[in-house]
Length: 368
Ligand SMILES: Cc1ncc(COP(=O)(O)O)c(C=O)c1O
Image 1: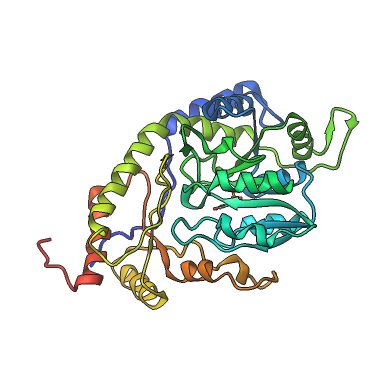
Image 2 (image 1 turned 120 degrees about the vertical axis):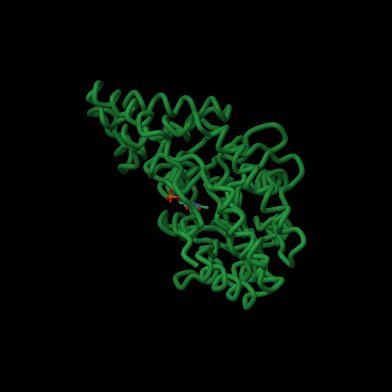
C-alpha cells in the first residue's frame, strides 16, 4: 500500500495572491503591529459577524484564556472541565487560580451542569467550561447556577467558531468567551485568538492587559504583550471570505462519515437541539480503550492518522490535585478524532471509511 498518508488535520490556506493582497496593505501602511489597520478591520469584522459587544484579538487562544480570567478579576477556585485541551487548565493555574474539576456529561462531552453546585465552595469565583468539538455546553443551566452563586462564567470556545445556539452566536453566552485561531482551527490567523466580553469596563481592562498596561506615556495596570500582528491579521482577512464554503464542505464530509459510521459499533457525541454546528472535528468513541488502541494502530498501518483528542483527562495531569473524573477519563480512553479538513478529497474520505470498515468487518474486497 503506497498511498500518501492522511493526517488528522491539514491547515486551510487561502489562494496565495489573496494573502499577498493583505500583506501588500501592511507593506503600504508600514505598520506591522500595535493595533494596525488590518488588525482593526479583522477585529470589527469578527465582532459584527458574531453580533457581540466587544471582541479583542489576541496572540493566541491560551493568552486569550489567561487575560479573560484576569480581566474579570477571577481569583481562588475555578470550576472547570477535565475534558478539554490542556490550555484550559494551564491558563487557570498560570493566573494563580486553582482548577476544580467537575465531570462531564458523556452524551455531549461537555461539563455536567448537574454536578457543578456540589463543587461550589466559598472561595469559588468562576466556571470555565469548554464547548468541546464545537458542541455547546448547557449554557442555560450553567448561567443559572452562576447567577445564583454570584460566579463569573468563561466559555473556552476555541472549537466553536461560527457555532450558533438558539439563533445567536454561542459567543453571546457567559461573561466571556475565548477563541483560538491556531492554524489547525476552522478559522485561523496562523497563531491567534480572541476574547469576547460583554462588560465595557472588563473590556477596557483587557485592552490594557493585552498591551503592557499603558496607553502612550500613561501607565494604568500590570500588562503583558498579547497583541496580534498585522501579518497574522492579514491571514485572517484572507481566510474569512472562505468560511461559508469551507463550512458547507465540512458538513458534507461529515454527512459521508455519518452514513458509513452509523452501522458500526461506534459512538458519537450528541449535538443539542437548537445548535448550528460547525463540524470542527469528527470524534468517534470505541467500546473501550483496547479497541480504540487497536483501531488507531490499524488505521496507521493503512496510512490514516487519527488523534486521541482529548487525552489525557485533565484531572490526571501530573501537576494538578483532583479526585478522578470517571466519565472524562473513560472518554479520554475511548475517543479518537478521524481525519477531517477542508480540501479532503472523496478518495481520502473513502480510504478512511474503508479502513474503518475493514477493522470492524474484516478485510474489504479490493474492488470496493
Ligand atoms: C479547547 C482549547 N482551548 C484552548 C486552546 C489553546 O489555543 P492556542 O493554541 O491558540 O493557544 C486550544 C488549542 O488547541 C483548544 O483546543
